[in-house]
Length: 296
Image (cartoon, rainbow, N blue to C red; front, side):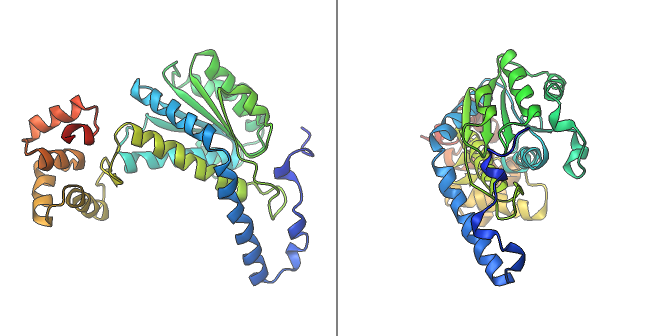
């Protein structure tokens, strides 16, 4: 594999004396380099917007979102998938992250896994990938065989395909229906793509999952109305969300929270419409889970 043409592998002219920098100089330099990442992401917004629409389309058809990647890219996909459950109240099957080498690769390098062109196909096949699903292949280099094989398999079964790379003219872009390229330039520590490339990937994944979830009613105003109150902090946040969404006092919010069996979205609809739990639940289902469509 020829890495010489990849900007993510190039040496950064601004940090050739990295090992001799003071801590202060290092911090300023790294912070300055990191500030360029958001600008790079902004240039990819048209593709990101198309990707959000495609993922939301899968969700509306009952499909799922799969992230596939190796190393840091794979770990970021697993992280984003895991965070969808508490944030949006999704079933763990709805958004899944697959990493080359399996979950053991989250902490240990699995030799040769990312270079296996057929491994992602096996992983996706094991999850019964269908044409209703969407697969996002993530690779900082833009040429990881695991990702290429997975995107090709997804295309073969009719699933939607999206690629995310941190180099221009990435090879994985040729294997995806929607190609997102965010060239971030050389890292301050040569080849360490967990830095700017990893930050760029995290920013894009945040946009993909959050944007798609909003499209299917997982937010009301700017509030997380489908969060799961799994601990004391989230219970209090749930009640505060109910109060803020309905402009009611804390006592009313708590009563509605309990009456709705701790379902934040349902409690909000009950207060806004004055309906009982059963009727409000029916109205919410009719509106496909969008609170604004139950009260508009």
